[in-house]
Image 1 (cartoon, helix red, strand yellow):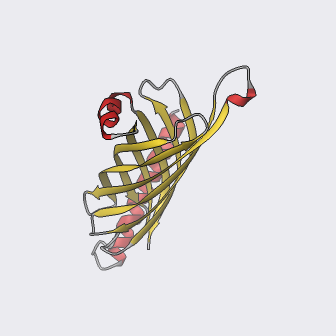
Image 2 (cartoon, one colour):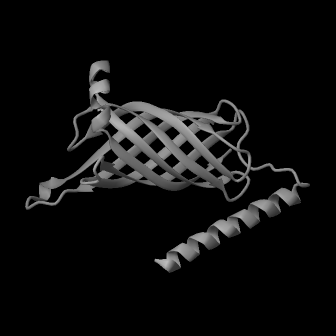
Image 3 (tube, rainbow, N blue to C red):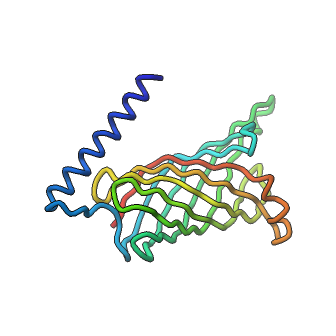
Length: 185
C-alpha cells in the first residue's frame, strides 16, 4: 500500500510542477481552468453503495456541461452500472442506469478546485424501481494542464416517487462515488 501512496504523491507533485511551469510560461498569469461560456466533458469510473456499504455496484459515468460563470457548471450526467449479486442463481446479475441534471459551484482559482452541488433525475433498469433520484454532491477537480483535470466526486442520492416520499426517503439514501478525468473546451 505504501507504494500506491508514494505513486499518488508523485503524480500530485508532478501535476503541481506542471501547472506551475505552465503558469510561468504564460507570463506568470494563471490560465488554468474554465471561463464563462466554456463547455466540459468528463468520463469517470463510478460505484455506489447503500448507506451501510453492504451492497455495491460499479460502472461508468459521463458528464457534459456548460459554465454559466467561471465557477458555476450546469449539465447532464449519464451513469450505467453493473452489479454481480452473490447468490446461486446467475440471473442475480443486473444493470441499471441514471440520467440526471446537475449544478456544481467551484471554489478557488488554482489547479485544485473543490466543488459542491446538487442533482436531480431518474434511475431505471434491472434490480431497481424506475423512479426519481436527487442528491447532494461534493468533490475536487485538479487541473493537470490548463484545460485537463482529474476529479473525485461523492454524491448522496435518495429515491422518490413524489415530494412526500422524497422527504421520507432521504434517510434511506445511497452513496455514489466517482474518479475520472475531463477537459474544458
